[in-house]
Length: 347
Image (cartoon, rainbow, N blue to C red; front, side):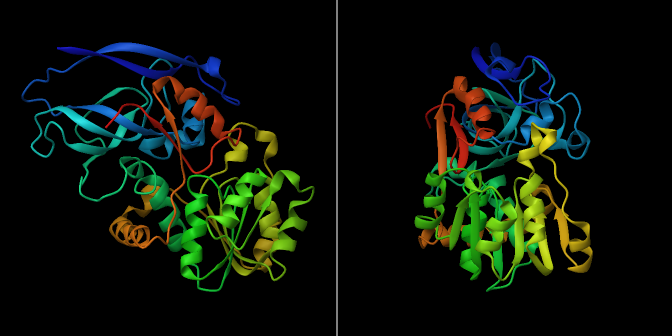
């Protein structure tokens, strides 16, 4: 027995801003008959994650491609793997039964064949939250925000925290975790709608629209007259430069992403190195995979916050495989608010 699998691929390497014409929807047959000795698990995809880091995998060359398995280069014409949630259709592995809900490394498509050794975990159906949460807040976005802030930034209550791309999948969570710790939090975003969301719904102390600022250093000086202690950086470029200029002595910068530089190298900027030396500023890049040792603590705390209504989840959900290219492109145009997810099929 076979099913037709519709999936998204790239036609060729993408070395600039992605366009609809860079992508192709293909259809292949997927067998639902798996040999009894096979460790393959056939999964019907339900929700898949849309993340900006994928653009670095689509380039003909990127330093990220050799850094970690999750960031390896994507071959044009092949399925694109991503984090997602699905339901098991076929499995001979004892830990996965037909009908089980799972989260792990699936594909931008309707079905996934998950090989032994690839990331796949059974979900607890009694957790009581929407399945999409396992793609976002309970997935890599959530652990990146929680552990990246607490483990890398090492914040203290009362410190002054700046978050860029603060309405995005990770930034909107970082700001809330910071507020729960008792920090003063300011976020930057790309529209007045997003600024209002940060201040009125998510509890940020202040926020600004960076597109309306002619001088980012002055904007941050206005928001942080006493300086920045912690900067959670999602964008890189001139925002990093401005943040370092406004940092206090022994300030910490966690580099989560540099989306402003992914598709346009001309946006690169350099912080003032004398500031880094004389203010003794720590700048550290990190990956979610570095922080999985605190996942149990992260999940326990986050569930507690959600159940108490202390944490709000913002999701931007599109429908069907055909919407994946537009959803991905939208990340680089600032179209999304919160975590970008595509719902592939009904639960």
